[in-house]
Length: 129
Image (cartoon, rainbow, N blue to C red; front, top):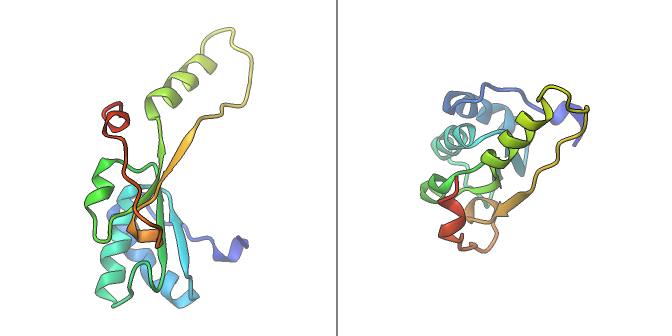
């Protein structure tokens, strides 16, 4: 994605809400937001402007939670295991640890906001959040 198409907004519902106008003006047909809170604000602002998700613009959030299932439309999200990631970071910061890259697994949970067929999430994996 070209740098001129990147937007910066606070990691809040208000940040997502405020970014909607710029996204519409840019003619974006898809957006990935930094977190679920931004996505909730963005979805609300797009609906208020008469922009239809996912028909006019697809929306995906990073670091989604089970609550993403209850937005309108339901929010496609990249699920990260924060418990595992936090543990890996703590290990990397331990005294005597060698500098290294930290990699973590991510799972794309498909829901209506991207235009994908809805994917049922395994309830057991969500309980580990």
